[in-house]
Image (cartoon, rainbow, N blue to C red):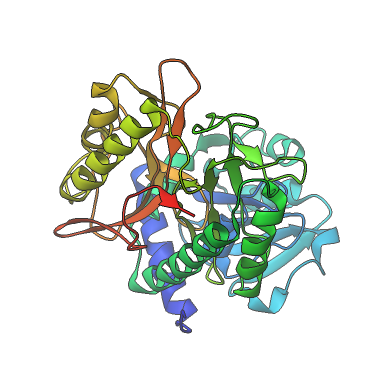
Length: 375
């Protein structure tokens, strides 16, 4: 289990990293948007210690001076505000309040994390007149290298995720519903402190044998599982660091398609190649090329992104993909999940791992062998 850390020291480290990125872009301040509505609450926790339970909030980080967090007035009681480590402000119109503060402070150039997907329109409009700089990539790069305290939280999430997958696999049987099997794993996840920070899905092929289709589905009670299922299990433990760990699951004697068998071979090759490729100084492009080779050589294509940095937000930059020249550094954490799809657009294989970049290469933290699990 993760142990308590000195959050004030950890926050100082995070602010230093973020301000270094701000300085590179001549920012007077950075607004970090978080919203429970869209699943982007982790960025606010990252810079304040406060977990959004409902509504939204903005952490404001001046280039000089103390950070503060702004909530809409109606959010005064929808979270444990005693957990925040910085000044808290409440206003009926957060954007207008931030804008007024910025004008008083004579800020001109302001970065915004969450400009495209998180910040509300009314708050964005209130910033009219400032030089607004989209800062999603830069903020994520600044938080991509994890501290030892963060890695402890990551490992705890991996422990929970791995055990949850094992519980899922033990509960699986052809004829059971996706909701019934997922509910067993979700009960464990919630009991271990994940709360609502789970996003668990399935890839199935109803009425067909030995394959799974590439579309992700919510695990509903009307989805009857067949003899081959790809669970997609993604959780964040009490420390709020997301991880992804899963394997394909088949029933005993399931007649897997030839394409699925070939994809499994390519997964073995990816797993062997990822460790040496995932070394400090290598680019995300290099890693993508190394892990995708076995799939592409067999004529498969990749659907969902090959991999990405992962932290207090489930999907962070940098992505692991073609043309992404960001270099890896020690203590980056990457979620890897090649989404292999056959030329017919149907046969699919999708398995997840959370990797740590070390001085000697990548290490899969869950310690699961790369195989289709038979139950």
